[in-house]
Length: 231
Image (cartoon, rainbow, N blue to C red; front, side, top):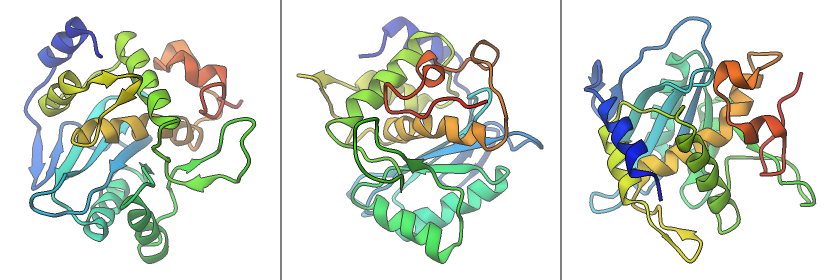
């Protein structure tokens, strides 16, 4: 799916984290005045099950700042997300809202009182109000993967985490479907990218695509289901 040359170039940029706090690996610490976005993919937290995973990125530069990955149950995962988000300047948390994601979102909003959570607005022509979290389904997943592919091919996407590059190598497409069930960090990356525009709009009045290496589809508007940049 991803270009082998691009993945090799990304691998060359990977390095050991500057700080490890259990399941949290950090490469870039929070900086004053910067906005951050956290993509989160939740799991049940069972020893033999999938990992819960989250990625922290600088919303302006899209630098990969941190990865959280481990056997974290929904309530524990929500707590870690909010803790990290508060450290990273009140970062916007962009969670998937399928399955265990509902419990994560509910715990963040109602029990932890954290309101900086991504709200997904249905595409033009679809009815319904904006809802917290990104819905991952047969319609939205191909679009989200396509957006990530476009960003990777632009040469502006980077990571310090070798585990993400390994998962990107493993991603396969079959008959238009992408199996990301065990690719936890990729799943977190997909929803993180969806939340970028909201994270930036919360701190900037105007964003210039070329200056900030923002993907073209984010600037052009909502034809792919992502909110347009507003002046």
